[in-house]
Amino acid sequence: MNQSNDTRLNAPPMALALDAAEHAAAHGDVPVGAVIIDRQQSAILAITGNRVEIDNDPCGHAEILALRAAAAILGTARLVNCDLYVTLEPCAMCAQAIALARIRRLYFGAYDPKGGGVEHGARIFQQATCHHRPEVYGGIKEAQAAALLKKFFASLR
Amino acid sequence: MNQSNDTRLNAPPMALALDAAEHAAAHGDVPVGAVIIDRQQSAILAITGNRVEIDNDPCGHAEILALRAAAAILGTARLVNCDLYVTLEPCAMCAQAIALARIRRLYFGAYDPKGGGVEHGARIFQQATCHHRPEVYGGIKEAQAAALLKKFFASLR
Image (cartoon, rainbow over all chains, first blue to last red; front, side, top):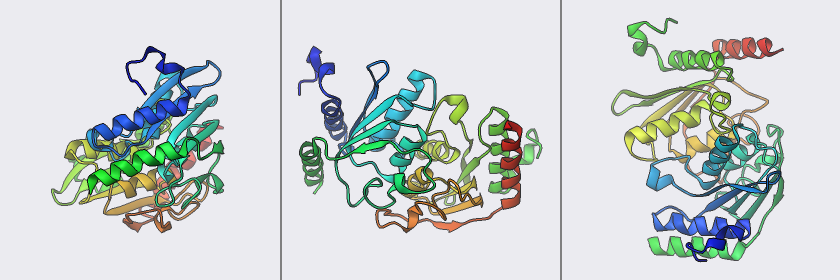
């Protein structure tokens, strides 16, 4: 994907999220990207990549940054008409944040058996302590998302 | 507790966290407060209260704000010598963030059967997807923390 292409924002949300994931890898962060779409306004509210390492932020996952950015734009902590796209299955931190933010639909790319909190481990949305459950669609552009991660971790060895 | 008392920072960390919780209630946020101590430097790195409502931030729980502030001060996303005090059992978002930040010890006040993620629900630190487990001490100044919450929710009715 060409970053300087003016038609970039016509790309499907997961393609934009993959783009953001590639940017994250370029600054040494795990390549995960996220996008939040406001369905009511048909607007992209946030395109973010992981920034844990570059910002020294333990909570700097792409999803958290996207939720905070979108909430700041809308002026509310509850993103009731919004969908979140992310290239990797969210961890438990991000899954619970997605629930707290009342995200309508979650679309994710690769499954994460080692660190995921949606289909693995804590399975956040299945807990009685979870008070909002988004619709969840996994495996969207899964191969591309997984390839980015594989390439990144291979480069660290 | 007197906010203007110069000896305030000699108070035990949980008393400071309760203080921050009271401040949160004053601006309409659920009264939860957190403190992070760097044990190596014997320094208080962060004293934070919930800011979800006042900042329109779905991730604005006291623990997340404290972790981000402490990491910014230390210039690292990994708070290996730090302990976190919080007046309420962390939710799954905050518990996973505590694990990601490599917090050494977690001290919490009131237990939270409806929304907690440490001793209830997702039980984050007991999951195979959790790669760092802090030592956990619950029930510290539990009655005071619970009384603050009870008063706050009663005032909303």
